[in-house]
Amino acid sequence: MAIFVLVHGTGCGGWVWQNLVPILHAGGHEVYTPTLTGLADRNHLLRCGVNLSTHITDVVNLIFYEDLSNVILVGNSYAGMVITGVATKIPERLKLLVYLDAYLPDDGQSEADLLPAEVLAARQADAAEHGGLTQPPPPGIFGVTDPALVDWIKARMTQHPFDTYTEPVPAGNVRSAAIPRIFIHCTGNPPTTPDLFSRFADKARVKGWQVNELAEGHLAMLTAPQEVAEILRQTVEREKQDVTHSNL
Image (cartoon, rainbow, N blue to C red):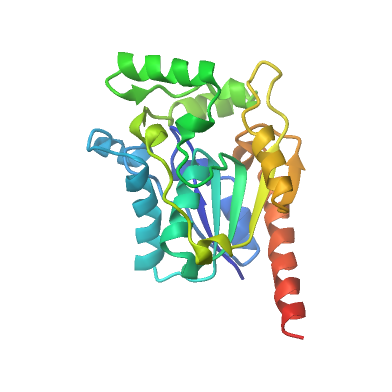
């Protein structure tokens, strides 16, 4: 059995993992899907000075108060920033970081530093027009084509605080740097969607990480949960083998 903590991306919430969670439970795994402050069912806290540190603390507190150890921490999209920060705070409680089509920052980088100039400018304009909040992107840009699923997602996505994009991740340390990490690159977004994540997949390869490619859109946990679960299952098995070999 593995312990998974799944962290969602921009404008989403714990709901985005609904299709994946039952599959992981069926495999005997323990799963937590926190909603970050200000989003989804916690959107009433949106205007409470939410930044990246707030979201890092959300996940750190969940893991501490649930007294979790050997956690496989999965982050989608923006949550790559969050799980990177969590690793600097409680590395002793983490077994593996999984970047699911996620931002991959270096120490001191913010998401704004990683965005193409035109994307950053569009987000800045959006936030200026809406009181520091960015509007949810249309699900279609992430390769979601089923009309019922599009409507379901749109009904649940919320505004996102721009301050989370401008705060840099905390500096890492020896213990956080030692945590194994993998990257899952979703390659099935429409051609009109800017490919923000292929360079992070390349960066992960340069670092020597395991990189999996999945021919699905950015929200693969909703559109292809079986495939995502299989990658996670294989990763868990590989981790078990590595531990067994290291003890021989």
